[in-house]
Length: 235
Image (cartoon, rainbow, N blue to C red; front, side):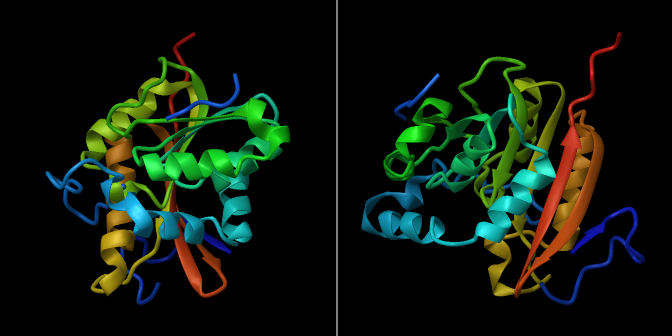
């Protein structure tokens, strides 16, 4: 079940609850992580390996939701910013897209590569990089998403500019995070509704069109999703 920012009564109020290639971040009202090291550093070592395996387990409903909201299908070129263990890459490839995972953690990249089935290896690439410096050509993607990774971005404005750069005209962007209570302990690894609305406003300022913030209930969890498009070139 989804509620759209523009359609929901009382929009704006806070809720009460919640690289090796194969083939062809936190912000809740401030400007991001600040000077806290390179994203991905916390996922190295044994704890990172455990976190990666945990992130890769289950959650089929949220994976399908993201891919369906992005409208991914054959011929799409998907970029997953902060791709982690790669489950969203695999889902995109299953639907006929080619997918590039940009992931700063070497541990996560290795784990993602190990989990790619042989039949999907030609469609998936995993490479080192961050949201602020995507190692991709201008206009090379039809879809860019960041799922549960936006809270790791050091500079949201720079990240949004990079996403716009790598998208082709009319390409789609989707940023999804868990919805946090306004004063809940989990907000440092999620977005409050107010922060999601702030992100939507920044996306508009970055030049995206058709921007919307929605919330989605998946069992006991709620996700907040910000979507938009790079405007088409003037004809």
